[in-house]
Image 1 (cartoon, rainbow, N blue to C red):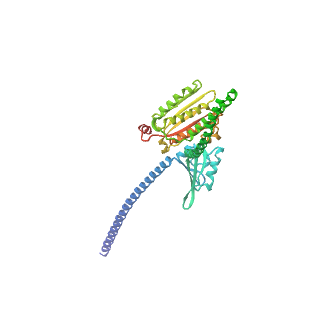
Image 2 (image 1 turned 90 degrees about the vertical axis):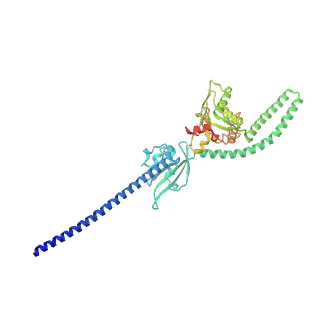
Image 3 (image 1 turned 90 degrees about the horizontal axis):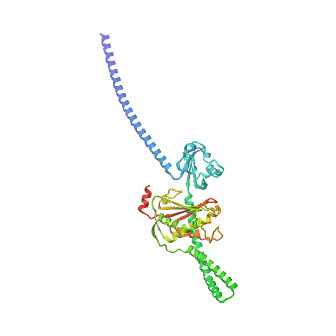
Length: 414
């Protein structure tokens, strides 16, 4: 009997142990389910975070590629890690050819040594800007170290195209100089004109009294010289005179066609070809018609005089938006380009081409282009010239458009 009681007791202990194991297993299973649930939740959060980071990365990449400034990022070994779309345009190097390579691959000619010195100069990488010309662009470049945990891990370079800004700055400086020159020239012109009038008057009286033909001829030369001088002074006063503009709305293309048509008598059609290429829609300006006519007549005359005896081409073109830079300010201007295939202008003379009394022609007064500059400026516009010697010149004129004009709103949609 004792053996049976002991066996029963053992079974009871086994049953209790089994029950405990079942309870422990159920508890463990519950914890496992909870852990699985928490893990799934963490996985979902992680996937969401990764997705958000990927979206942010894509968003930042789009911003980087949309910047009008060039951005180049290098590591400590000067190997290119990032090169955005604007940098590709500025440096004419596609991303897939340079990523992972030393920054020297961007510059493969002797003229690029100055650029290489800037990129590799560590003292430069402190936010100090430098300006250099590269592939006909004036670029301003700044560099700064990328830091992590207090140490440098690379460098970011920012390239900014300031070609148009530099031109506008030079135009502003030229305008300031013209203002000072204009005031001085106006005072001198009035001081000279008074005695010239007296000289012409007394010479005319003297000519009437003298009967000797030889002396009369000499006096006639004096009077002729005085009149030539007076004519130059009149041109000078026209350059310095800031009269009130008589403004009216004009369709630019019709205006230019009239200008070109009125010059037909000046052109030898066997030798000289005049062409025009205009935007699809008619831009409207607010301008003084007579003054603007004079400005374009002077430009056409300058172009004709630059052509050699074999003739050549003169062309008119309008651009919208303006060439060179897609800035918001360009949306307010129409660009007119007057080109010729003439003798061109020497590089060293270009900065002075709009200066009064500066001329490369023996019979020129040196006021034609100065008057053009003055008229364009009075219309709140800009003018600059690009020229290659023996290949021709192009005058770029920017004139403000009439705001909220229906025609221009149509242009901006296309």
